[in-house]
Length: 134
Image (spheres, one colour):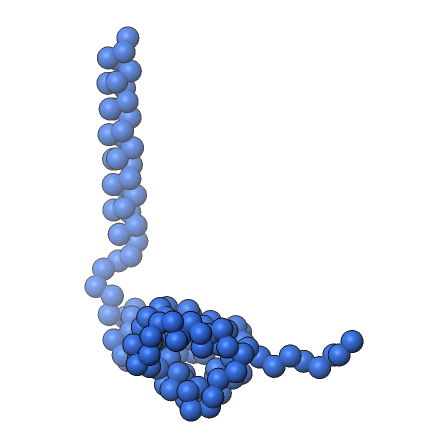
């Protein structure tokens, strides 16, 4: 049995990075100037030419090395660091807790009160229906 490691499936790695970035195949296709079917074919390919890989990396906003060395753990760390830096720096219009204009707990309480009221209304309606059948 051959114990040599199988080379990474570049297409699957591109697909997973695209999904983690919440990007559809159509959006990647548009960024690359190709059809959605071409992106699908590329994501099913084990290897991709270096020039094409550079285009894909640019469209996804990652480096070629990030695609080639992709692991779930590496990508999660990348996104965590990116968002942590964005929040601490207040850059790119990202969420900055120091500029929050409402109390999130107030919103939770408001939602809870509306749900309780909806349940009360439903109970009243059901009681009227039950009285009508008697």
